[in-house]
Length: 256
Length: 233
Image 1: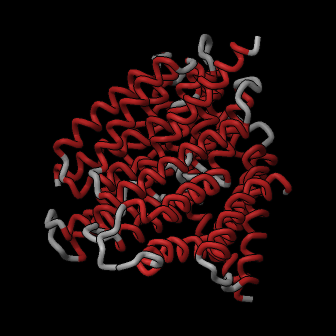
Image 2: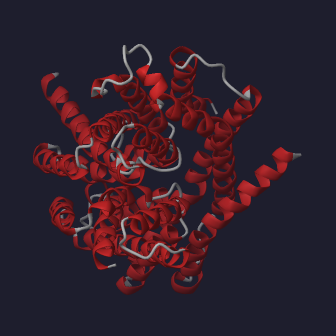
């Protein structure tokens, strides 16, 4: 019974998110375009599927993965866990002592990105538009590696306290250089993949990790240093997707 | 269904591995977790179906209709409405705006009262939503004109770097993050379909080169506008 009311509650919440979009789309369709929508029935059923799917997805995440993921982020950043095995807790911690945090950051970044619905959507489109040249899984794995690397580096930044803009500006410089050498076709898609990666699944878990770390590491302020992981997660996929295209191009050229 | 299971397998493995081997703790509420995971798998399956049946076709058919109607003004108004409307109600953005108002209050940028924090948060929300609307408009104009994306994005990066030097230090992390959180799960497929539909309908545009890129603008402008907001207030 409780489960049913939870499902209903999530459905209503998702409905609130979808309503503005539906109003804009159908408003413009009827008032400005003034033409019947092709396959209207099919489109409406599609919208209902999206609504139901997203509600179930969010509810499931909230019931299963988020509590565990948040708890784990807290436990892994807990000093008791990190100090464990060290001779004295009084000694200042070296950044390398947080190695489990980095490994966790990497794997959680990778795995949540693989499950990210909006990335699946973009990968399907890219596969279709490129005539199969860009593989759905190839793109998703490339993006996931970028996110994983970005979040690990972002955790390292929180631990060491180096200002975020050094990393981001260096990242921009690399992106700009890579843009000149990457195949022209991939550039817009690579830029897009930066924004796409961080949504429903990744953001809550990554935010928990960032806040947990910033609260634990001495000298960090949760409100200032806890942010910024998302920025890393949206910058590095740009590089990894361009690298993926460069690699495929290189391999295609050398296999002939 | 099998596809969704495969999409979720990595995350399940990661959590199970860390829980059982590294933290060495039993998984609490095991039943809840099984039910939740089933929900996630079913939800993802439905979502992907709905995507191909509803969101993609409508995005493309609207792009097509606008392109044939030839009314640039209406297209741009639609682009702005889509960007603004989908962002302003985005739960992730509401959460970030609230946190930002706390940072601002702690840093003494605004008065530490519920009233001023609330107005700061909603001001920030509208700023970001406006910037996303503007981003989609810029992106659509780019598709219409066939400008190449890299110089525009680099220009944006340049602006971000310059603004970083002048913006209050407390706001920088939030500003950088706000670029990533604005684009939601429903907005991304729609906006992507819109861009590709436009690039397909207009002669001389390549959907691969011109069709993508709208999301890139939508994740860049919020950074600039949030830092600007931090500097002004």
